[in-house]
Image (tube, rainbow, N blue to C red; front, side):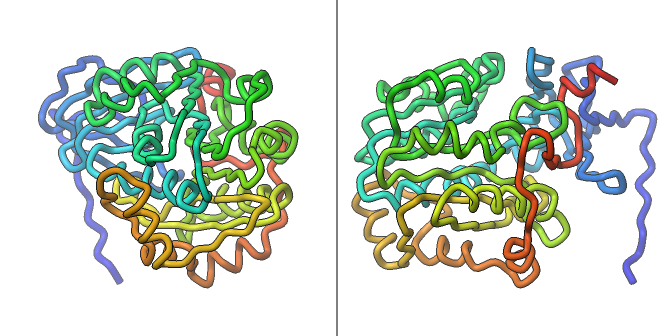
Length: 336
């Protein structure tokens, strides 16, 4: 059995657990704690707090962490970290674009930090990327602080829209080759959980896809102990709407867990290593840091426990019967 080690908190040590500290210039021994569950926390040593605030929709914090660099935290949950965000965003964006014969238009739901747009714009065939985020404050401070995405925000092929993605898709007449769900995790009271429901996928999102169109979404924690929080339900919900559905996962260090994505279409997917590698060389500007044909194929091979759960999942995500990961959005907090 493992040894239990207790780390006492000194008088000088500041814990930052989702409520903002009084002084933005944090001392060297400050830590951020993300509550994973009632009996589990994940801590980050901080250099400083770069931004904090509560927008109309969510609690937003931008941290400078010692291990992972700049990190975006929304409603107390890590969204991305400078040192390893390429893992999450390459997995979210490139499989769908590489699976499409000639992707020209992309609609990103969420993605306010700009990393998903950055990755989509690497594809030579792209004519337009529309990024629709509900929270102008998130977009504004990411544009200011996340230098890796400055070129993407200035790209003439990027259309930036501040709106609810559901309303924006409903109002638009155009259709898209790829629709991406780069949304915050579904937390109770948060702004995003309605965008994981069967009715949204079926009645609003799918009709906005062109023939051969592909939908892909981040789908939350997918580890042995966490995949049944929302990942298996999101997968099963999407299966009710699309003919062909692929789930894949990989470890993201700053998330302290395996993470999941779901890709779907009414056209079959052909995931062959050599073809994907050839297409990467032909259609993408620059190098990918994480994905190639072999690695993407390996991500679709799930362990026995997760695979069995996805196969046997019966829950379908609806507004009245939603599942949430641990935590609460601003809306829920304000009602307590």
